[in-house]
Image 1 (cartoon, one colour):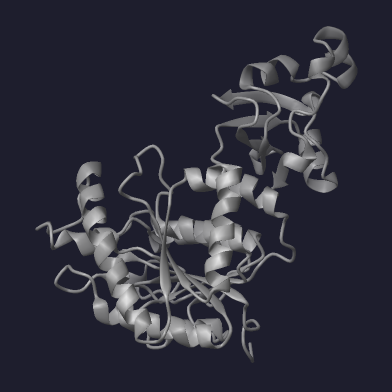
Image 2 (cartoon, one colour; image 1 turned 90 degrees about the vertical axis):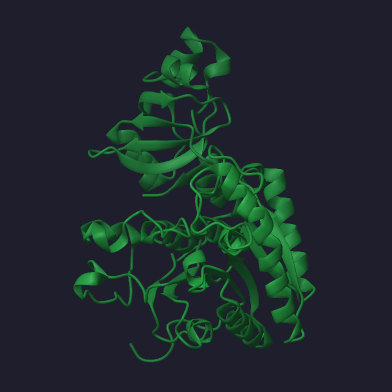
Length: 376
């Protein structure tokens, strides 16, 4: 295609991974970090607001603690993150000061996005930092996270921040040139554009396996999930090589660099994006084909008559995935009005039967359309 891929965005979220920020000696690559800061400052000078999601705290803390590689046990990971986060922020603050910019640290946990009030408060903090001309530097708060309660990797965190802030572009900087159509070790090429992330099931899984490096946690699969979240939220997404000279300036300008994921045509409302991605599903509700069509084609609420089964351990108000259709794929995510046991009690019944057999308290949708997001 000729010309830029997209117009200059108003707001950009940039993620750089641990594998890109690690120097050959195992410490933090301050040269790359400084170059990235220079590019962020250049983009910011064009009037584009930038949020930087930076891994590297654990990597920065390895050498001072005498660790040769990323620990696998949580206490040592948290110790490395505790030491490294200060080193990482000092590096960024000194680098931004050279360009007359101020940066601010934002450490997030999943609770900060799962809880609607904290989600909105976090968004307000980001907006205020950006209005004041600061560059937010975001990382997961590894020192207090647990195995059971983690974002998993900073690719997902970056996508959630982009969705939260209504960013027009998510840039995922990695140690590869983009998404390959097969194993890059066998000479596969980079895909310049992916219209739909869901279409990638046909590709060789070796091209985007789940394992990350020995320094980071995110492989290509996590980047594809991040791209799916971003594009569903009506943002462009690009995967590119962090070590390519001037890569961020090129990507923001719409140059044909890396792999580009075009956005959905319309951005869902903020609350539905929160339901779709910030809430972790606690169960699954299986629906029949008629209910699946009503949800997808007519935007209906999910009624008890169309429910076939419910699995998981969920309560009223918890997020659940909705599976339906011939292949029982996930078609939606929503907030259940009933706990699982009550969903099983009401399944298959009409509204009239619910009132007659169970009482008026059960005469309501299992998931109201205002709390339902179609993801198919």
